Length: 597
Image (cartoon, rainbow, N blue to C red; front, side, top):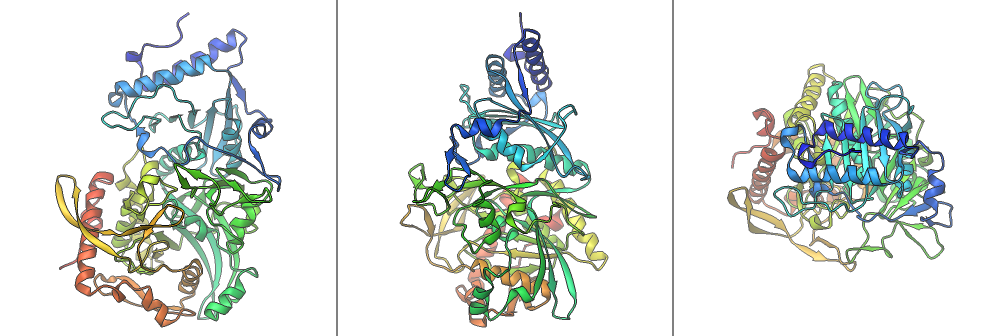
């Protein structure tokens, strides 16, 4: 009885046909092929998890970050190489020989959302924790309904070849046009979560929206004119930049005294009705913002009581932890003092938790109004202010297109301290259509709102970057050309993880106060010394001293000529990566940051 096809005959659709054939052959022989949405996944997973004293559970993954360099996107049979076919064949061979796969059906997007997508997970039965945690992130979907996309997750080594033309092991293959993904070798929860969300981003685009790597919060600000303003704020950023920190921030009794002592401001008198809507990837449409998940899978590094909503949810007995250490009393600890990965103390503890456990979730993951505040987090150590406001839609679209950030262990150990460009803060998750198409659509949203005199406020934040850090000029090859580029000097901390040498960063509280005061109209700006009226920089923020604002100004440490050189280097590097990651951008976006030297 022949079930599998020959390797050389493997096609994208043929993989799915063969999978269905395997299921049919097993069932006809009286062998269980699939466990259809079993109710005992947590019970199975608890048998090999860590049982914390507070009642929560945790598990360890074999890889503690996403396998970005081991992932490929294939859109047609003509793109299939021998290596791709080999891993597809090995996946099917394992499915045929393995016991019944765990099937879990969920909706990404709420059941009433215009961008709802039915996702079906087929997971190796030896990893019920992966299937359970993913099920708790999303909305249940009927198993008898045809799914929009499938994910096949086998965290084993299957004799994996390398990605063609590289020395990186091939682990993940995504097929956006055909609606499925294969994940191997990694039991990291992020591969499943981001695997499905990559398909959802494409799904959102096809529905006329922008699928963005951003979070959503809402609050009502008491403006300086005495009126109330409902703020619908999306926050973009790469892992480790502070996206979750600032999307889940809450002004309340637990921290108001700190603001009064440090800034002379009681924020609880300036803001009300604070709500978390969605922590990660979302859909921006003209009529509103739509969340993707009912839960959160977020980095819990250094979370404490001052970040109360996140801390409250992460310390709940219902939280589901990953690579999370324990303290001396046996409870989850987020300090990064015990576990290590590749010889370094862990900086990527993760937790799945329920949004209602934050205490600021109203049960609705969708916005109550259209987007009116966009926050891009782009940490940098060279020429960035702590905060600024982007007035030009072309410039704002260029910032989104760049997706600039500083490397963090949550992304990969290899990128710690390096300047990164990941277009739209979403490079690994963009497929099906080009990144340029997404950027252009977002630009069109900004432009249309501006023409209606209802502009979206756009802010650029430097959260974890070091303003005034030491740097040196070095030769750097970009493509076939070599340039002199500034490189941040690094020093090694006691925990063995490098950090920028010198410089200063805004505190979480300072950044939150800026966002609140900016929303109220309590910030005064001036034109950027080089970019002019395209970018406004703060000169007065109610509650923050002029001296502190001066410390967070890069021109305090660098002359205008030096800043021009640093900015020009950033422009050259950004264009290099845009040509690779987002080709096809129109010139008014591609050249929006250009300056005359």
